[in-house]
Length: 229
Image (tube, rainbow, N blue to C red; front, side, top):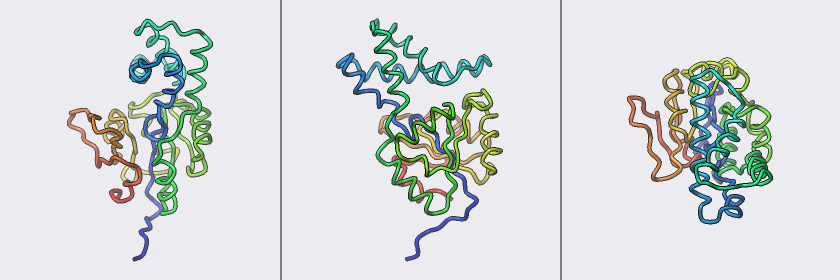
């Protein structure tokens, strides 16, 4: 049987935090500081990080995503009445710069690139931060480029960032798929005319019950090729 090879006009926009890169990769560091409270702390930190990016987007009061991350860390410490030292907080922020990729990422990206898809990293993070993450994970060379919200100072899911992606990747919405484990990202992309795959990384993950639904749902990036068209 001949291996499937796609036409070269299909572009895949991969969200980075939470989709390619495991944002709970700080868990080992948190466990050394907080013990059994580490998972709850990590979850709250991530939730607040996203909330801050949404709020700043609505307010048109942009700061780099790393600042949302830092302020969310400060909030989470206060929420759990956890007295982390300045050195511990800095250690956690440093961990965020080198978070690990999920296990399915490298083999999936390697296969998709070999079959002719155009792969881009597409993130709220700065270009520098994303490049560092991709290099640390050993996947940077699999992408044709990085498109960052920082370049136009607008966070996802503002429609302008998705339109900006199209100009930077020289693609059209009808030939572009957004790949993300974040429901807000999927709905934002579809609302702008993209197709979108929701990566449901945990069985208990819930997609927002809106009128907008994912084009496809998969649990593993290695299943993508079988559903893209």
